[in-house]
Length: 288
Image (tube, rainbow, N blue to C red; front, side, top):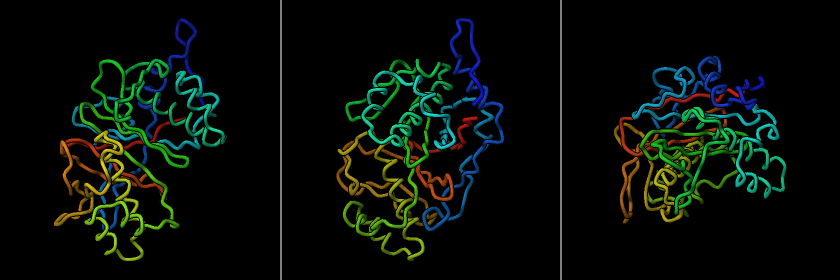
């Protein structure tokens, strides 16, 4: 990792450093495609328009920015620890397994570095708060909305202006009881759809559905007050795209747009955002 440049007072100007990295590091752009299968139909490049790294953290009201971070490629967790605040230090101390501790520290540092770029603030100066439903948000006046997710060595961050957003990623595993989980927790529409999938497509279809549902719950910010069986994200004719559909008596119904993500050979995910007509751009976080 390149040493951080110092400003007059001798402190690292970390926001300026990472904004510079994002503007000049074009080779780190991730080739992300929307999921190709019975889930979304034809493949589509998830990074529309200008590569995310070239935008320099310029976020329009019609944009959704998704940053993917390879946590294994990050600097050592101990070098990132100083970016976290006291509450995060306390949370980190609760992890008894070193790998889990380091992944937490790295993912929180990634969040602070990225948000700091958009706010033009040093990462330690970014302040968060948690809603009554447990969803993190920025403290103080800002129209930036975000959501962070991580799984076994990877993290992803979705950022918008004004629009509520949720994101979830998972590493695909073959040893999962997909149909049993769907029958117990998914809506009837989703369960029937998964039962109709060919054996070769069952696991990818399950994870696409699961991540889309998790992203929707996180976008709504309602936590366990929004049971998974009360809405569906299964594809609907004629375009075979994932669509948000309320199945039960859900209070304060919302309108969400869902986009599937493929962030690597074994990592899939989804982003859900309030409204429609937004432009999605995806990039890989430039650790070095």
